[in-house]
Length: 410
Ligand SMILES: Nc1ncnc2c1ncn2[C@@H]1O[C@H](COP(=O)(O)OP(=O)(O)O)[C@@H](O)[C@H]1O
Ligand SMILES: CC(=O)OP(=O)(O)O
Ligand SMILES: [Mg+2]
Image (cartoon, rainbow, N blue to C red; front, side):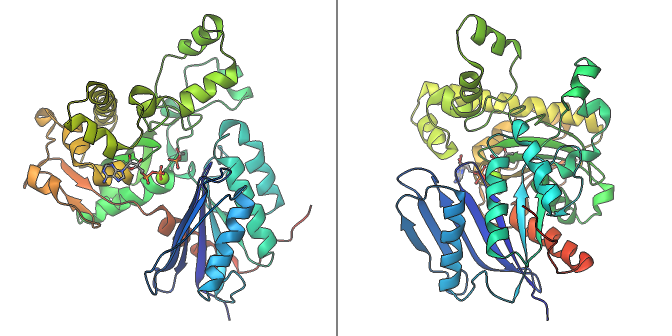
């Protein structure tokens, strides 16, 4: 007998999001979040879906290893422990898969080594992903562990979009190219958008705007990514919660030469102290909107810079695709912030883009159109579900590849 359950782990730099799903009907059995790992004020919130009653723990959780062990304890309390024979596999979100990983991959020692080799290009993400994998392998060495890469969906980008105009020899030597991230979300949402339009993914061209704490845009032609806004690392592109997105690379030389900053200080500045938080002191769009509504000028400027960049990418990807069937908003900001959606497509009627204010104001968990009836280009809100997508890809792989784990070395 083999199980049908998949545990999905999405380890971020200071958090772990997880879900346990039953893939016989894609239902959720439990979900939760560990936040502020490594601080004194860590918090674990666990919800078994059978009762829907959340439990919380607070107090220091020192690292991702301890976080995952605490998650395993919570699951065990609900009779959903990692020792269950029902568990078929563990699926891991891995942010950087380089050029090498174009598909979900069963993790063995060689795969682990390659993910480790990519740490320099995803310093905030890959180390946390690795710890999650190592702890899960130690807890259940007999189970297949599958890596689902953020970069995989973007490997279809043509060279003209994937290459920087940097000396080819130097770029190749250091594997400098545009990889793109949030691919699991862009894949899921572009497919769900085609379904919302009642058409096959191969027939539609969509611009996906994944606006979470990290944010990225993609141009998807007939189900395949042809361009995306993040690059070598998740720093390029849109204005994000704490990341600058696009900036003249000479800013870095200037800060080093004239500002006397070290490379590590500049790295922290651009990744953690810029974006919305750097512009106005808040990175949460709810708080920024509240301040804007109160007439706060600094928050208004931060909002305007965020929207200006978003608009530039909508225009750019319109031109890249030539014909656009839908522009779709997803992730925390995209799904919830109606003023962001309205502002991003404001004054773009000549491109066939507009939102209907009443439809845009509706809240909900279902994919929905927010453009006026009969619009040439649809504008949509499609909630992302990276965990379901990771579970689906993980389960499909173990079903076709077998349920045994590869041997472990070290
Ligand atoms: N009701 C809301 N209105 C506006 N923004 C929201 C709302 N709910 C969440 N957000 C935004 O979504 C962000 C988190 O998005 P999410 O996709 O969960 O991010 P991540 O997965 O990158 O942590 C928050 O920082 C906040 O800015
Ligand atoms: C790649 C990336 O930016 O991920 P996140 O949005 O989870 O930080
Ligand atoms: Mg996210």
